[in-house]
Length: 106
Image (tube, rainbow, N blue to C red):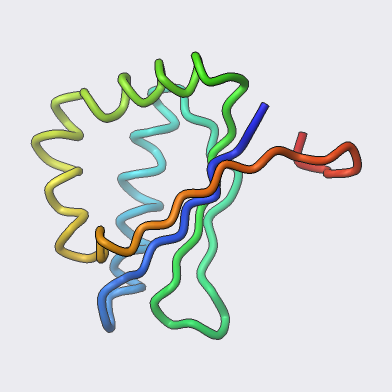
């Protein structure tokens, strides 16, 4: 099991718009296709930082879920193209993390 810890930088003054987009469209869309979203966060001291996490049981599951989400016409034709309007795609940071034996996220 592992997680994706995803950090996004949101364009100036658009964080509220981004959070609404994530919570009303992106997260429900991905969850409906099998993704497990374990957290969605904004940073207290950085106005442009948004973080979210997704859990995967294996690399094979991650590949299947990526295909189910990112190859879906709703993503490619509607959701995906709108992301770059609000988020700085060049500054995305994705870190794969593995819970330790004492982590509550297992």
